[in-house]
Amino acid sequence: MGIVNATPDSFSDGGLHASSSEAVDFALRMVEDGADIIDVGGESTRPGAHDVAIDEELRRVIPLIERLRAASPIPISVDTRKAPVAEAALTAGADIINDVSALRFDEAMIDVAAASGAPLVIMHMSGTPATMQDNPEYHDVVSAVADFFHERLAACTAKGIRQVILDPGIGFGKTLRHNLALIGSVPRFCDLGAPVMVGVSRKSLIGQITGRAVDQRLAGSLAAAVLALRYGASVFRVHDVRETRDALDVAAAILEEEQHYAV
Image (cartoon, rainbow, N blue to C red):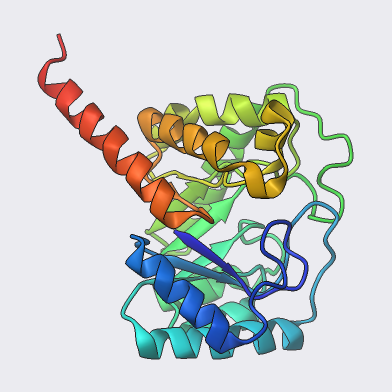
């Protein structure tokens, strides 16, 4: 899943795409590099970020989605917490809803998802982007996230939503230790019966471990992605598509061969 942020303030690539045509060109390069999905977002959810008005979010993402859909059949995910944005994005050609609030920010989102039949990504986040890194605490972060997913999956099932992807929310209301525990616990989330998505690309945990700036975190991001693959993750939300695709393809080939010789 290649990331295209139509935002001025995202932590890694905010402001890089001044127009929807530039963003579409960038997205198409990601497709050439091996992306299977393009994730389009118009509201930053970095730590400390504040809400964007619906009209502004629509202005940012709808022309981009329309142009990308006209240019490519690539599945498009819309990264939004707002039901009107999700509904308009699906009408414009998006295929997937990626809701970092797991349907809690806008109570109408679950009905939009159910009515559309679109696959849905639900993510665990403690608090809101504006507050989530204010001293996050858990008695047991892995159990807390697993319990959260269990409850959210039940809510989706009750509405007839069957295609759900789980995102443990690396960096969303978690400390470094919380993030590392969640990556290592991907098998537990896989046991809930839904695909697991991991988004670690360029995030602060990579910088905390390596001391690298945001634009120097590729190697650390690849290491985390490969281990997440080993643990069972099947969707990877990334900035560096070509490099991540190569790393995952090589790791997958080794893991596949390993199965033939497993004792």
